[in-house]
Image (tube, rainbow, N blue to C red; front, side, top):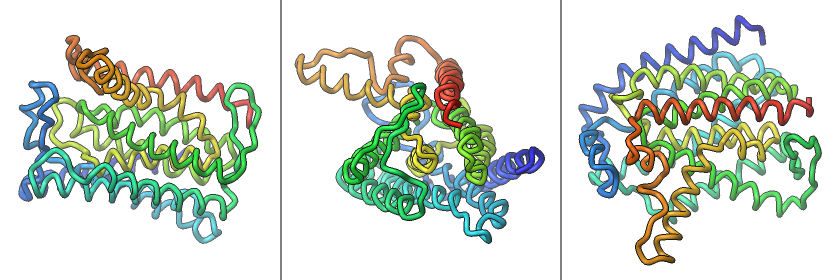
Length: 329
């Protein structure tokens, strides 16, 4: 893939995302697909109630069209890596869409039950991992970043571990989507890392997907940056979680998620710590509010600062992650 073609992919995905979002917002308004705000969230977020949600449809569409347009040559040669990962992420997007639909239809913040989402996500993760295994893209060894060594595991153990990682990471991305533009902004440098890693791993054809994702998310950010005109909804955040996890496993680099996904992990850990400590101490809290981006809001950070700091931290960590895996090439 030439440099010119990579630029074209970015621009095409950006244009499709921007134009489709421009057209989708009036439709979402007409359908009254407005976001319900959590009652326990920051009070100043109540002004966002009614902002259109499910905007993730736009960047999913843009990424899908771009992958098909620029992946036809690979598909004809029997190389379906980018398509497999996109379809995997799309399944999570559909789970998120079902969740968003219930919220919008019944005007409540909670959609599908936790058990329903967990069952669907585990099934999607298991099917994807089995497909990668059959296609020869996935081994049962764990690559250890920095040390450039691998640890072999029994396939059953690796499968259970991987399903846990995927479901945890997907929901961590979902938790990150609580401040205007945050999930999109944090995911852009993560996709930059995976685009570069695809070439390092001699899977350059897979770089098409993260490149399309970068362009599409930047197009979406034109509408999602503070003050947001639209939210991605669970449709978008679960899709992004699936995309990030799918790329990590397709490149056989699942442990790199600990570095590039540091912000996602902190969002999840903050909730777990808060809930556990609250129960053990009968009402005391570690953070002012969780997920942790709300804690910083309560400390006086505005949404633009949270976006900038969290995205910046992720960008630096992605550079470190590159150093961690560069010896593998």
